[in-house]
Image 1 (tube, rainbow, N blue to C red):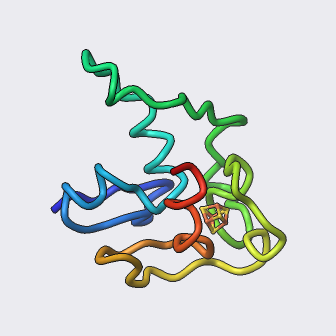
Image 2 (cartoon, rainbow, N blue to C red; image 1 turned 45 degrees about the vertical axis):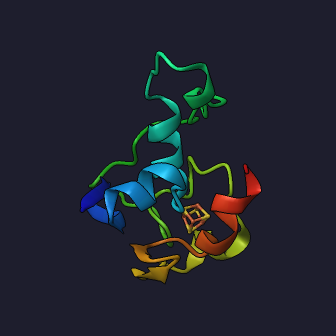
Length: 104
Ligand code: SF4
C-alpha cells in the first residue's frame, strides 16, 4: 500500500497498483504526472500546480488543497473532504469519482 499526504493529511491511501494506474486525488495526479519515464506510453501531460503550500499558521478553510487544485469547486472552499472509499482505495476529495475519469 501507499499513502499520499498533503499538508499533514492523507490525500489517498491504498493499493499501489490501483493508485499508480489511476490516481483519484488531484494531488496524487499531479505527483504522478511529474514522474519521469523512459517509456513513451507512460508519459502523461504534466500537471503544473499553481500557488504555494498554505501556511500551517493560517490553514485554509475546507479542503487544504483547494487554493492549488485544478478541479476546485465552491464546496471545496467551505467543506473539508473526509477520507472515504472510492474505487477500491481511500481518498479525501469531494470529486474523487470524477477526477480519475476526467483525464482518461
Ligand atoms: S476536495 Fe476539491 S479542492 Fe480538494 S482535492 Fe478534491 S476537488 Fe480539489
